[in-house]
Amino acid sequence: MNILHLVQKTIVFLMKSLLYFSLALTFFLVFGTENSWILHLSRTTGVTLVTFCVVEIALVSVYGGYAIGRLKSKPIITSLSLATIVTDLVTHLQLCIMNVNENNNDHFVYESPHLLVLVMVIQVALIILLTYFGQWVYFSINPPEKCCVITSSVESLNNIMPKILRYKKQYNVIDMVHYTNENIFDIINRNDTIFLYDVPSNYRVLFSEYCYSKTKNIYFNFEMTDIVTLGAKTAVLDDKPLVSAVPRDLTFEQRLVKRIMDVAISLVGLIILSPVMLGTALLIKLDDGGKIFFRQRRATKNGKLFDVYKFRTMKEAGSINQSAKTDDDRITKVGKYLRKFRIDELPQLINILKGEMSLVGPRPEMVENVDKYTEELPEFSYRLRVKGGLTGYAQIAGKYNTSPKDKLVLDLMYIEKYSLWLDFKLIMQTVTVLFRAGDSTKGFDKEKDKYQFTE
View 1 (cartoon, rainbow, N blue to C red):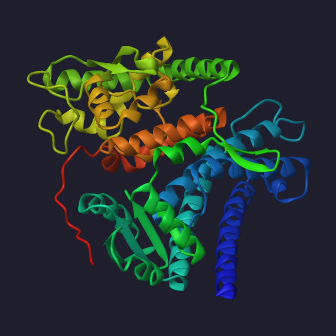
View 2 (tube, rainbow, N blue to C red; view 1 turned 180 degrees about the vertical axis):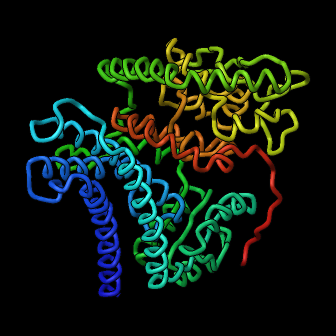
View 3 (cartoon, rainbow, N blue to C red; view 1 turned 120 degrees about the horizontal axis):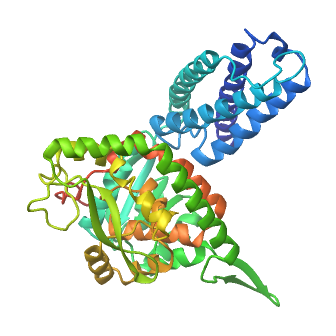
């Protein structure tokens, strides 16, 4: 079994190495057609290679890398393509700067943009080819893991099952059981991976320790105890090992840099995106002649209320103040596309410039939703410890109809793991939302229970 695992890891490593080597080689070979010297050892060649490798590694850590076997093909292709395209842009700019010398150009010239486009096309094609080929190789060697789902109710079962079944190549659900099942340990023994969802904490500890002893893979949903320990550190008092969990808050330096970044990026964003915003305003006016902007009371840090700005996507007459549903008849024709590609959120750059919001943070919820969610989940108020944001964990990893509890967990993960580097990563990752626009903006709908316990 260990030998098989070693072979699998070796194959993945070789596939990953082949992909990254091919991406770099494509850049140099294509640009070498008009700059033959770049294919020979020189200072410019060395600097260009280092730039490409460093930027690619940094952006792969932001967007995600060649995660075959763990993710679906489309997210891998999207992440790698974005990372590589930005790497090409940076490396090409650096190459143009390096070419300002006595042997090439006496002033800066943005050279050969047509070659840059060709490089990107070839690289994206390579990423698509090697991703699908890598997935085929991986899943030819690795059959789906036999899985058991242990929950506390049919409702909980129907919350988790659709998520697992999106990864049919990774997981083959054999058993779906209640946590009080008398044969629970026999069921665990015959599976490779165990999902514990909404299981009482004492049972979760019992099953987790048993799975650990039997070397079973374990997945379980977050509870508040898990959130508290996210930002925790280990501590040793005398000879007593402990976990030290101190509530997080931004330092003065972090708040200052975060505010400077908010002002700079929102200001530049408003300038660059002004043609898009003007065009959007015109389309809204031509659609039904109503107001262009929509203002709504939202809650931010410490429960402070403010008016969030958005492009209007719903009909003015008869629209009640509640979250949208799938195929909501209140949404206008233009509004469907604005919501799909998140264009309706762009006016919030004004809120950021005014200091009412931040670029990154928990989504500022409607006041009605805050009251409702806090009544159901008292912990929901914890997300108000920081300023609301245009983007964040919940906005990127979640969807419009993600459950309040899962939104809370994602937001608290951001708060507990906060760093300026994390803000940068989330800002860069925001563009990936556009590649799953229809999925990420699906409305709130109640689905019937489709899954029942097998035993």
